Image 1 (cartoon, rainbow, N blue to C red):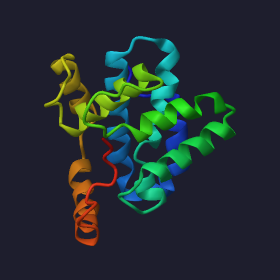
Image 2: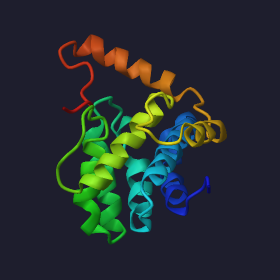
Image 3: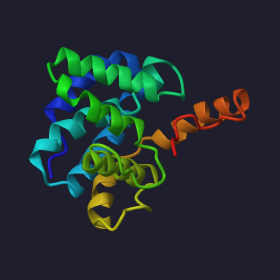
Length: 176
């Protein structure tokens, strides 16, 4: 399986200065989520959508300097889609980003791509422990080829800060 994608690489080129030292750890997370999507969905029409959603799904952590990053991430994705002439994908990619932390099945509009994207992120965030019945060996191979580089540990610092600043909304990025 290919571990490089021109869409992902092109978008990352723009955000590399903003991501700074976190660039490679986030990029590997993005690729693992993207590859998990491809593991589940063989529809070639969705490859570019998954690539775009994967890059932008957490980008608001850096662009808006917040753990409440869903809307800033969506804003960046919509800006990119508008500049790229892909406005017809705004609704679908917005839903993919907005619901990617949902703990239960997504049943709304664009159900297939939103649900696969949600599962793909959970597969990575759980370090492959949650696999939704998909090939554990392939997920493990993605993790080996694209190591974590401390991505999960990196996330703990802003989550703990947010917990102390907003104890009644400690994980604002999670949606029911």
